[in-house]
Length: 218
Image 1 (tube, rainbow, N blue to C red):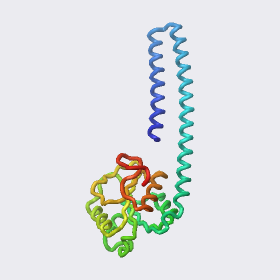
Image 2 (spheres, rainbow, N blue to C red):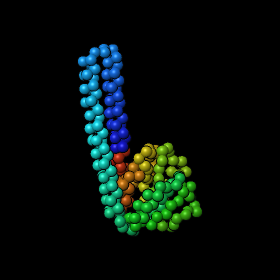
Image 3 (tube, rainbow, N blue to C red):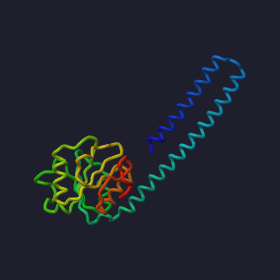
């Protein structure tokens, strides 16, 4: 949505200046005072339309900001105590964004963070109760290593619930992943809500806004 907003503004600016340039070139070739007067009228009308477009875009941006704020408030209301019976292990190749652990804790989950290189014995989590754990993998662009995929499959075979999340700007390779919940746009309120609902329901499949998602929420 932000891309569309910026693109719309850029398009208006480009059209406006293209018309101005054409008028100026025409005026240079045909320096008649009638033509100059018509050009001035057209320029005035274009300036007025541009101001109206700017005002409309500002209104749309304000409405978008209000909608985003409403999403955040809705997320906080629905998340409270949603996962009080869950133990979640966050797994990442690099450091995780704070919001991911924060929203899981808001939902009442017990949260532990480990590096993806720790998915081999001796485990930094309770391996004897792995079937009761939820593993949330933070994905980025590019494929995962064979070692990581093998560790994921072993966890899934042992009965762990697997979830894979990534941010709006990322398009990770999903081929070869063991079955689990997949949530894109995790850096948004609706992405975080989809994760919480998916864990609560034990859902599988892809949810979010990117191509291939079967819905916004499980």
